[in-house]
Structures are given as C-alpha cells and as structure tokens.
Length: 180
Image (cartoon, rainbow, N blue to C red):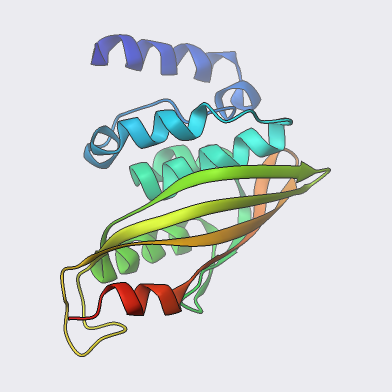
C-alpha cells in the first residue's frame, strides 16, 4: 500500500506544483504515518479554492507530518509565520526550527482542521490543536498530560503559496488541561 501512495505522490508532483499542493497526500514520515487518519480527515473538508487547499496542505505537512521537504513546495522563499508562543519565524529554516521547539514543548503536537474560509489571497482556518505537555513550559514541570484546544490561523497567499501565517491556540485552556 505504501508503494501505491508513493506512486500517487510522484504522479502529483509530475503534474505540477499547483496540483501537488492541492492536498498533502504523502505519508513519507513516521509522524505522517502515525497521523494518517487525521491527515485524511483534514483532506476531506469541502474546500472552495486552491488557496484553501494549499493552507490545509501546509498544516498537514507542518504539524501532522513534519515534512519539511513538502513544505518547500507550498511556501514562498520569504515565508513568515507567527505562533501562539510569540515566535515569528522566517523561511523554511525558521519553520523547521519552530517544529523542533514545538516537539520539545508539546509532544505529538497536531492539528485537526474544522473549517476553512478563503477570500482572494486570505485564508482563515478554525481548528483544534492537540498534543502532550512534555516540558516545563506553562507549568513548573512536564505533566505529560494530553490537551486539545480550539484555535485559528490566518494565511496570506502569494502566487498560490503561503507567504505569511499567524496561528493562535487557546493557551489558557492548555494550562487548565495540563494541571497536575
């Protein structure tokens, strides 16, 4: 079955970057394989535009698959992204570094996309962010408690790629859920 998935991804990539970016399909990382059901669920959303599909593919690759190689196909070279933790990163190297920090803070951090609204070059996502508290961030020590909180993201697209992003998860609810 994995062979067929890899063949499908190869065909999508040969068809051109716009088509390949429509949905994140590759399960070529261990994290992606672990989150395959979530990625497939996100991909079943009724999306009204290519920009909306690219935004979903971005989050699937970033948070549900940790697939930096695919991210390079859906972001601009000068991409800027700000997260709830107050960090703003630039470029693909910044996104990769942010992933490392997120994994150290919240093991298994992932996103379930609930709703997508797009208008021109703006895309808004409503989502549930979840993970496990695995560091002293937000508490005196890691509690190893799972959490799921609502959040949203806004993207600015340029040329069919993510140029700027801003995501906010409910940190107050995280602190309540991870209490010892």
